[in-house]
Image (cartoon, rainbow, N blue to C red):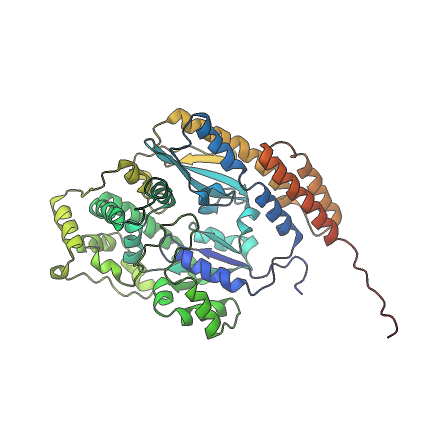
Length: 466
């Protein structure tokens, strides 16, 4: 049995979007299931409360849209509606994590809402994971004993995937308004033609990529680095190597089972378009990128990143072997013209990259943090509605965090301090919407019972005569 306070299988994954992040995180989560369930009381109480308040902030936001009669035009993927849903990073105070929620309205654009919670909420999932700041996570003493991973991929492949990817906003829009045609690859191809012919846009993606690796490489020794290509080409061998990093002896049949469940399938829940059906092949970028893109990659100083992770020097493509897609791009780039065949401008707006681009060169509105929330990357044309949503998110997040912060701050290894924390949480009863109040009451009541049983004396019986 694990000592009191020890977390089994403590793992951390920090990786760039489209670099094998979701795939490796899923593999590591599966490997961690060989350990006993997390056992310490604080984590279990926090899990109960997070589940109880999971929909509280999202419900308040949905109500704003509904009051204005706009619920049918709201684009708000369910992945972002859970309390701990969306990509997250360390808040600047390092005591909290913030989750990015992407919210849109058909005909009015979208914005990013960041919501901060106590850092322990980020440990609610099996694997702590983020796209941002590898040096910060590596330096945090709270994660000193975590096994740290960072998936990587050849930079050309990351950038190509970023241009063909559809984010969760776009996925929600297609699911809602084009359910019978939502996996038509024409949408991706047309959007990619814009992203790959607008060299300012491509430069934004490239700058973000370089910024991430410039932070990762100096702290690389803190992370187990695994390449996406190795997992695709040699999945069994690579999964076993990941297992060894976790001090696990993974047998071939177990690795085969793990890979069979993850081999080129969607791994992102309600975001149905994260995986592009029929794609995800090593070297596929050679049929879509052009030498213009490779030259920009070289000029941005990314070739050392290639060499750092064993991809060798940048090799230019044979232009006589260009595909029709590449020929179209090459022609537009040479003429200095952007190819933008997407007629549906809502689709275009929602599909603009939100989490893996240096966005400073684009006309988004950005606001400073309130106490619990921040708005950024906004192109939302209904600014009064935008501010109303932000205000309700801020006030509701304040109530949620009032219930979570006593758990984060308390010592749950002593009965007196554990009960004192629950007493402070009691003050939050009745402060939420009716549904959340009931969920919260149930969670808190169960937390009380769990705590009582956790500290209950163990009775030892005396065996009678046979």
